[in-house]
Image 1 (cartoon, one colour):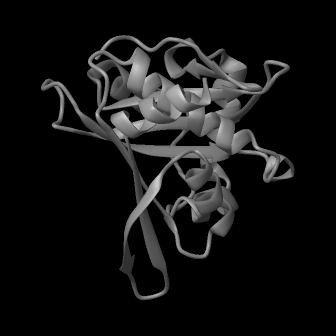
Image 2 (cartoon, one colour):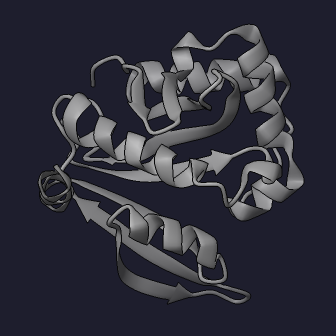
Length: 188
């Protein structure tokens, strides 16, 4: 995997994790400690000290286990986190598939299109900047998170299945590079 580059789409810019300022690290750390944000990601708020959280995130970037970004708004303020992870095949082999995760960390910004623009920027990175380009990006979201499903569908993701769990349904979606390139050609 190559080192990450800044990618712009609409109002957002993806800033590579390894380029974060100390203040941006503190903001992302707060996102991962937030109970509501953690629940939307089917996780528990992290309990690691900030220095260890930062070290783990940086180490995963350096080994190619993930490609993480801060989401900057049109004013350069960090408003979220976006990443590709679970690369298949695993490093050091050349990955062709990854899983997408996105989080807009300020609920006041939800429903304003920042998530959709972040997904578009991350797909642009995955399919045109990343070397070699990924061939497929997948994701899972909650069945009751209709806002996320609409945003992902607006970006071209197709639902490929659902899985039932004790207290929820997961919706599995994916986008192929060829479908993404076709969307780009038709919108030009």
